[in-house]
Length: 231
Image (cartoon, rainbow, N blue to C red; front, side):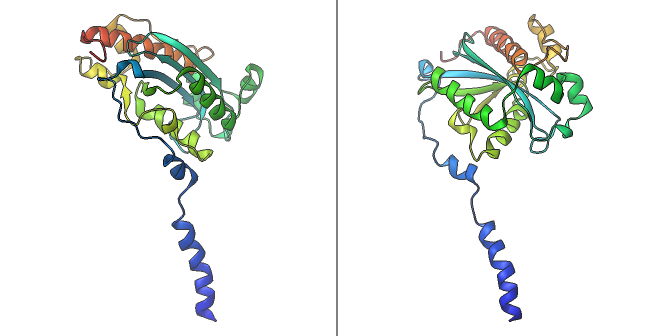
């Protein structure tokens, strides 16, 4: 009897440990592509993405807005999306993050927002309308940060961002580093490239202003490199 009781406790744990989460199963639905932007530049687009969050730790802190600007490989804008998102745990907002993005529940209610689930659906709808069957590279400033928060957002709904973006992503400071610009910060990069900096007013600083800066930086960097993408 004692052995049976132990097995009753252990077997459900073993079974649950072997169960793939929904977002992993969703990955199997992502179509495989052999296309590459060098050979088929007309089949590729860029998504310049910037997220604002309640803190620095993906999986604990959450996105509170996101800006997406779709461009061609030359950085020419095609369309854009901006969503203000109400996080599931607004109480986790760090003072430092709020100083940057101005987040508060009352302000979000005043300005309008979508839920996390609604944000994902609107993002898919936007992508389908604008991108169609073309491949898209995710582009961001310190890209690991943005893609990590996007990944966590999609995981909550059992989805994967790979339905929207290619496996490889582009990081703007890394691109700048290859051109001898090693300052890392957006302010330093803007100075070196001669482009406008992003606003630092927390009531105006959003994912879309960040995405706009990313586009300016990308355009300046490919101009500095002297070789248009896909050539």
